[in-house]
Image (cartoon, rainbow, N blue to C red; front, side, top):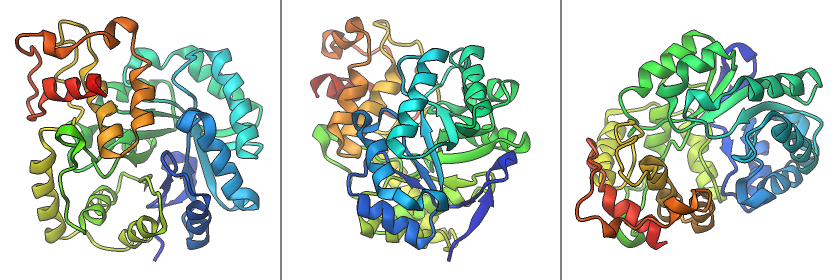
Length: 339
């Protein structure tokens, strides 16, 4: 049974389970999702080195008019002219004349949401190339006030059962301000030592998804889906109630992934004497070991400065970074450097 919510003040009616296309390579899964009634699809200019938009455009074909489509600017260049050039490429690759939501990608610092970038988004809207402006982030609490100040209409944020406690009030504040909220990385995927993935119960994915949907401030979610089985499992979660049994599954899972999964609390920011972006690097390992997407993790790692890429945590006698949530920081960063 499909369930819909309104995406903030945009007025867009979105199914509570959308489709995150980041790691999808089979277009038939996307086409099947449209047939089932999922109506919100999310991609980005730089997913799969630019190939993801092309695949999504081909998969949607004439069905584009039946769904709501979002994409994001890439991480580079971060200039107004740069992202305006990118929107032209995105529209061409997606075989559409407009995006329903266009996000600035992966901004976790209010200073990164510049007036220049927001003005470029507004210009694209005036030209009819986008309908609503948004931002995606892995550090939601840090940018809440800037989002409201800049009159950004949609936020796509990492949000899951393992998120830091500060995320719930941040989401509620944006919800009360009329900002449409989209949850990503709802499964809190992580990889263990040497890439081993902590085993998870068969009903974990459903429990994690229902947990996110259980917050009425979340309009939709964009879990990654690579095959029909995942699609069907996530679709069923849309109409199922979050139960005590689900809660127990997630509590147990949180204990298992504690040493590996960054909860994005911000505590580690600026702690590394070598200037490493600790939370980001733990996330890069998650892409490789948790999602099984080594190229995606490497792509992000290579965007670090040469100085940061050459740091080796094994050269430090002890790690200066101490995670209050139990992440084994030195081991995770060493894993990133090893990969």
